[in-house]
Image 1 (tube, helix red, strand yellow):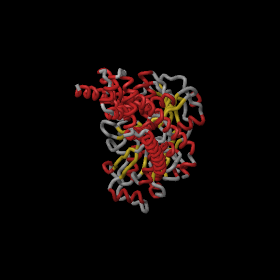
Image 2 (cartoon, chains in turn yellow, cyan):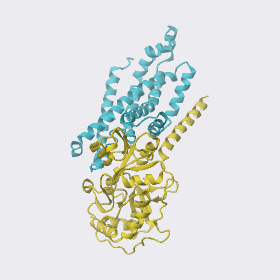
Image 3 (cartoon, chains in turn orange, blue):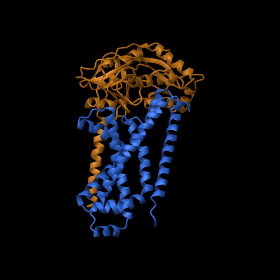
Image 4 (tube, chains in turn cyan, brown):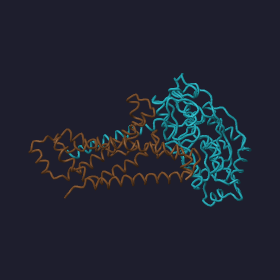
Length: 299
Length: 218
């Protein structure tokens, strides 16, 4: 009797766990772009050799370690995405990160990725846990107090993601009475709260959780940078669409340690000289999702 | 200190969120836990089975999964729209239902400290099971389990931070907000720790006060 109730308990527990896990994972079937920008066909870039970066503490640390540690995102298809099954990373940001690593003389197998969520980015750079960060990292003055940015390498703006059959929401002014979702503490959500008049807002740890709730119909819209939203549209084009035009300007940069102007200059020079690489990466990852844009000039 | 004074709005709303989760979740856990604890020692086999099943399923599930079930599996089943109030209610339910299992077990252990002869004597006097519990057993049981019960509530207080990932603003989510405002997160976490230490000290103080007041005269 005793062991039987215990077994029943275990089965019910598993059922709850399975329910919870499907709830959290259903938003990520295979990635649309399979990380082709790397060396598979014609390589877009060569791994540099004999790189000298006089006076860059970050570069010295990389060289001493023999590998480069890059902070990235793992749940943004088209930008920074990690396939849960194969562990393969792909996306525009990831390829930008690879490109920078190659320009510093580090081969594919000398790259170590670390998934760092938005809230921990500055701390990871300040602590030296990562050498640089490429992952939808908006350049802001507040952040510049703690770290430095190279770039920008992409300019996007805040947009709205809604269900494909939604006809009510065509811009931020149509949000009255609607529930808007984004990640905890994010600036775009704050802007919606302060400047527009949403019915209510909810916040989860990741965008994919918001996408789940949107597909289930528990929320009406998701807001964040359009480049991020476009990746989810590319993943589930039958269920999601972007509503209206972007209504802010976000400039994505590469987060680096404060005061490392050598590395900053190196990356900026790479971006400035590498217009065709940039275009090839953009065409591969972002253009198919319906994003328009051109390479911004670095600061 | 600037991280507090410059962001007083955040600190007050997150502290409030934590306290609401703690008080509401704690009340739910106490009521539900007492019921389930009583069910587990009741003379009715069905009640015992249900109580045992409940404790063994929920207590064996990680709290985060309980939250996932409430935040992601329940709304589509019930057709809920996820407003702020709904998210808060779901979080309180998740915390309360999870913590109730610990409360139930703590109370059951307290019930076991009351010599069975007392319950038998009360039954012999003609009291019903409900009367035996509420008049004889539970008053003594509660007194003897104050220290472990407080540990359960201290754990609940700290568990409220899990709700930060499920759209309920509390001290666990202040880090994300402060990071977005460009504050140093390490300092933020240290302050959150200080707040929790103070809150737990308050609970320990309440525990001592209750212990002194409800001391069983032996």
